[in-house]
Amino acid sequence: MWIESGFSWVAQALLWPVLGLVALAFVYALWVGGMALAEAWQRQRNPLFRSLVVAPDLSMEELELQLVRQIEPVRLLSRLSPMLGLIATMIPLGPALQSVAAGQGQQALAVFSGAFAGVVLALAAASVGLVVYSVRRRWLLAELLVERKVRGVST
Image (cartoon, rainbow, N blue to C red; front, side, top):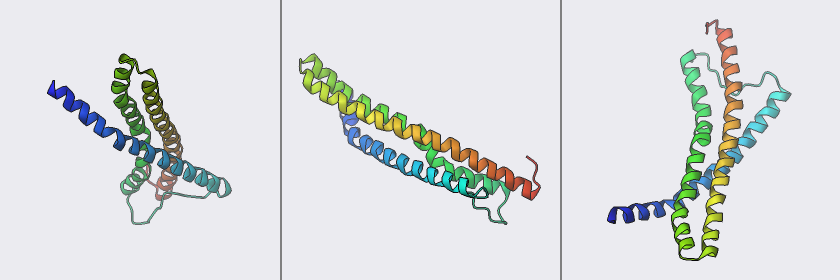
């Protein structure tokens, strides 16, 4: 019994940090989405635009690592946001179900609406992150392919 109450206490203590992370993920998704739109506009205006900074002394492996470093945060956004949304939804469900069982439907409804708002924002952040990751990955891999051809490196 004390293990269950301990787990419940820890889960409740995680609610606000998780909601804070969901909010940060949503704001970050808006920021990277805007940056990707700006980059798309730059690429449309200038077909030679490159976002992969290529120093002549870098090896191809170092360039590939640079590419991964550039897109890894967005990949993590698209992978972690749904998990944070699920956590933000599941934590309040226990107390909400207890409210329903006690006949306090209005209180449970308020908890449910807050829980679902968290998952909606997290899924929106993940969706933006996945689109930005896919598009930027394609752009960067195309740039890497051009660099390989310039250096005469076979793929």
